[in-house]
Length: 431
Ligand code: LLP
Image 1 (cartoon, rainbow, N blue to C red):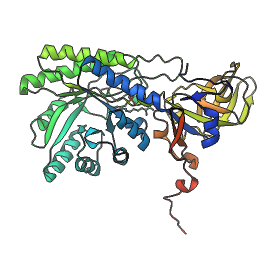
Image 2 (image 1 turned 135 degrees about the horizontal axis):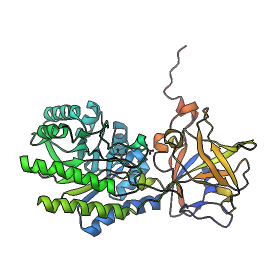
Image 3 (image 1 turned 90 degrees about the vertical axis):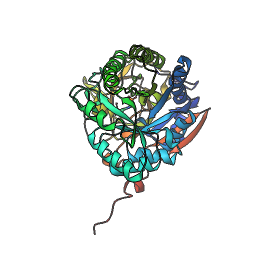
Image 4 (image 1 turned 45 degrees about the vertical axis):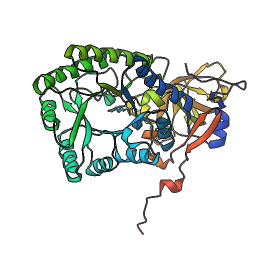
């Protein structure tokens, strides 16, 4: 079910290169990205808006995978960029990402973050709460500057996804609540504030979503509020940001929609409300993260020890695990994988893939169908391109793996493997 080829040696390829050769050259665990696929996903969003003749901005949600090389690719593809922290903003600056194309998010932005964003003249700040309004207007006043902002609201739409990644429901730490008057109160403070240009509304209803209903419902709800503000204050938005969350295929059970379909249905929903309200069409902004990089990334591991508990299960252990991919342990996320050096062999066994962290829950895949496996084989786990590297930890003092980009049958190291010296770099002596 994966999009990659197998060569005449029975080895899995990525971007036309042999994964076994890559594993030998760079070591394992190793994150490898097919850059052509990243570009293709990005272009799908951008081109669909172009075909529809709708003004739009596609902002890559860099939390999914941020590195200088990745942000350079996003820049080359004319994407905008969603950052949520000083660290993500710093990475964008290091990548020379045009600052007017950067949008800052966050439910607890610090004075330092806001100041950094303002000093670099970033394109837009998404206001999340009243504290944001206080800090932002104060800093802007001191600096005698103005800023384009969106107001993040929670439309109370539940997306069918795992609880941990549901950010758009009523009981959310993000955004202004639409039902209890908070959004109206925030609007009153922002609308016509001398430092603020209120471009419109933002909502993000969740992640790994496989239908369009949730987005359309959220649009309906946003327009109820917009109709009220038009009536009372003659306010019309120039931007509507509907967030990210477009689902990808992790396993054969996942059936993601073509991204064109989300875009087209969203545009139709917005156009419907726009004509009813008799306002001009706002720009539509999206923030895809996972859908741009998720399927383009794989992780290569070397299989080491194996343990069979007769009649129960067989474990195969790999040289990484929850430190480079926390998603199975944190969200019970499912993944698919193949033995990359035997990718053409029929799978007649089932194994549980265990990581090497000192924790029983460090299991990457349960009941993975595999052919005969030997210690030293290479396991390729698919669809690890989003929230893998970006959520990596140093648990057990593992060094973070390297990241390699593959494009035009050429491999390029874009993040060096950490050394143990890197791991202890900030440790200070106490003797
Ligand atoms: N915009 C906002 C405001 C968001 O909060 C998020 C994700 C995105 C865009 C991008 O969503 P995406 O297109 O990647 O689904 N660590 C979790 C996902 C957390 C998502 C948080 N917000 C995971 O590994 O599944």
